[in-house]
Image (tube, rainbow, N blue to C red; front, top):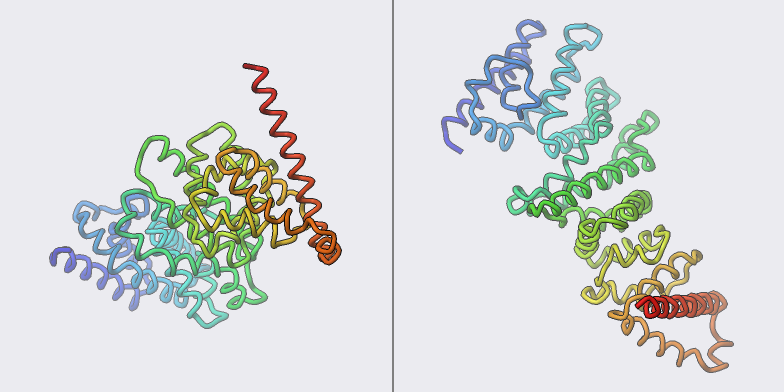
Length: 396
């Protein structure tokens, strides 16, 4: 960044801070607010005649090095010193709301709001001010913008190392943080059920945009989204999100092969330690085992962790109450000849081990029930596959 841009931006922001600190006169405050708003992205600027003197390098300098501190100053100053009952001040409040938080970098605005709320002692006017901003931020689906930024091709390489952990942690733990802070005054949108439902909707909207990018052969990346999904499921909040994603994937993958490719890449890049936590709700909510093949493709052959989970963990080591899980796993593994051997080899080993009468008598009732259910589904799947092959041969 050149020194001239840095000097211009620092001088403009310093003038604004000084004015906001010493004055409560609306006519004096508005012009300086208009000037500094010209440093925001185009859609967030307050109408002003100063745009022409602000260069793109000035805006980059403001966004990169100054925005977070200035936005925190606005929260501190307006939240504690402004009487929102006054009509003129309310107008200024709305200008600042729309300009400096709703239309700035969604990633920066989100972290500033969350950090300010966490460190502000309450109850207080400035805490309520920041909470209201965050509530509007979520309801306007700004989380979708946050999730899209590390996925869009232009920022992937530069941003990938700095996004990830901090942002993912804040997104996942937001309901707990706000519950601890606001207690009985917590807002509905911050409760776990509506919050994670909203997050699922925003994640699906990003997946739809990624599908369109892939269809147009544009650069995109799913690493951040895969890591977020893995951490969500590992934290125990994946069920609410996965229900929405499964519903979208079932509709999209039915006719769109690009959507299938996107879903395959999304699940392939889930961290290994999160794979089981992701696959459990996935195979639970899928309505048909064929959809499992659409979403995962040949991932059972290329991902050793998934191969272990599907061929051993789900079938042999864990007991599930829902038949849907076994039906989807057995159907997926037995339906395609390319990975049927992955499924049959451990099956023969288990059949041999369980073949003796003594073994059957000593087996725990829950394990015996799981084996019986599993074997029944396997025989049904084998008959279905044989009928499909016979039908295909007769059509030829």
